[in-house]
Length: 152
Image 1 (cartoon, rainbow, N blue to C red):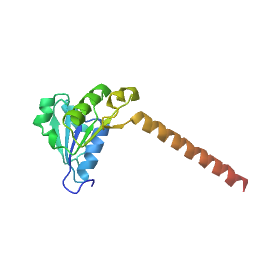
Image 2 (image 1 turned 90 degrees about the vertical axis):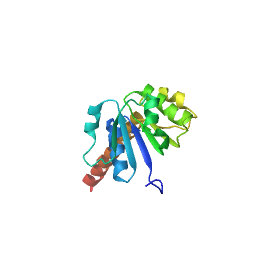
Image 3 (image 1 turned 60 degrees about the vertical axis):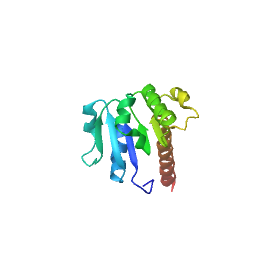
């Protein structure tokens, strides 16, 4: 666990990534609340998820305040909209001054508004692309090894 005391984590957006991270954090003993405006989104959470599921809009700051978002040690913003993610993340980090705010952004150009904000950004497109080239390199190494083995 990242912290010595019970860590309070909020996930805004029950996307595949949000659901997976919420599930992993809850299994590691974090107090987790996942928020989504679509109740059907919670269906992707596994049965083992032991945190809270809260129906609400992450862009409604009064709603977030009513959920005690100010008590969060970690917030992941993972809605399906880069603009919304930037907007919510800025509120959480720059206005509420939460310690750890992480957001998912697909279009790197949109993250320019977050520059020097202290908000950590996950770029799935970049991560998948890097993994593609790792896999490709592994395949090339395997092929070279096969050729070397055939020569013996």
